[in-house]
Image 1 (tube, rainbow, N blue to C red):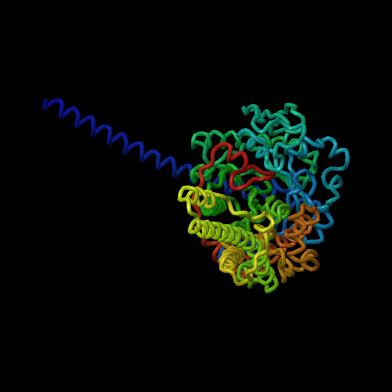
Image 2: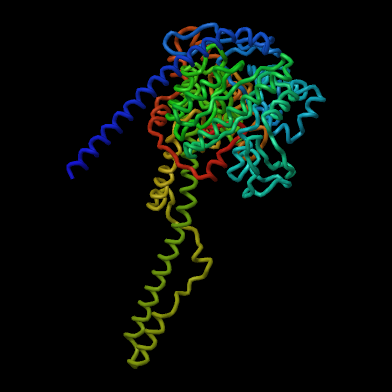
Length: 594
């Protein structure tokens, strides 16, 4: 037993020494890796100017000013079709068209750059057709800076059993929502079935670059695999590294066919894991990309998303433009700008507009209810209360008259029995009388109520009930960055969406008219709100740029973000969607899940 104890002690000591030695070795290797990474990064940055001259001769990104209290910065993103002031918003013309707006209307509201989707354009009308007709610039009549994504997000979102929200499976020749359109993923690429005609396609990194070449946008991106936030970490690792291999193939194909008319962005993946974000940013930083896009899963809460964006942005190179894929909430934009994001894209502003959602300043939530709205709503409450009270009072009056008639019959029967000699006959007569129904005609039961309805307790009770409902209409329980114009009070509101807005919609139309159009399904309603939302987004980014220039970004944010909106973000609970939930959360571009 003593020898066994000695042997166990020696074994424990040997294991401890081995663990210590492995830790020391790991630390030494870690230090060497960090030093090697720093050297490679310095080397790549010193060579970046020459690489850009060779790969991107017609592009440049110049930083004009950096904020003193954050990483926010002003820049000029120069492309062959024009210069974009940054920070800026990229509007999504998903299928080569802005829903509800023409390019001229979009430009009139100050828009500088738009995005089209590679996946949708390859399926209809096809990249070859677009190329023959002069590329997206001429095909869409935009003739300004354009951005295309790789199509990866749309394909991989369909692996969960549905197509993107804008398709919704309601086309006559589309497939059932339950059919998975993603047929397989391998090292070569992704095989999927078209939602248009059911044909089978294979998208590889090389083909994605070729399609984007034919579409002709100024700024293009590599093909990547997009994973939701609730997959296992091991899958996130495998997916990220496969995306890195695809990224190298995309970059090689871009270099092979480079014409100098396009610039390529690399995409940072890694999900919600910091060590994976480190690995992915290192990979993108050390390759010859013009810009960096932050993608991948950003978590399941807004606060978590903000933290991941801040962490990832802190790791990417500052000498390149940085794009945040699929994010367009006002609060999210301010968070991104403060951490050095230069451009954003999202379908939300236009989608909200088509469903009656108008973007508003923070002051909207503190404004008083318009007197006309309150007066009309009070009148409506009184009218509803009157109708309901008349029904109830009529029923009450009918019951009262029936009771009186019945009591009268009983009284008459009692009077007759007092003069009847035969007890048995009197008893039978009395029983027959009290068991008979009162002889009240239907017209008599529906006779008008004689009492004044306005003074009746039932009316007063019903009026109080309806007024309480109206008070709920006055209360805006959820502060947001947009207001729903189907809101009950909008029915009588003569004011524009925003009295301080100079867009065509706010200069000419009331909330009441817009509510009418949206409620009745008039397409002009969605168009008018889209004009306002486009103007709002461009106004927002102009104010942000002015705030950076004048060092008063906090004041700008206070005008756009209500304190209750920020408080709601901090109190937001994480969600745990199923695969189906993730699928229905897909979009033309990325959202919290890319």
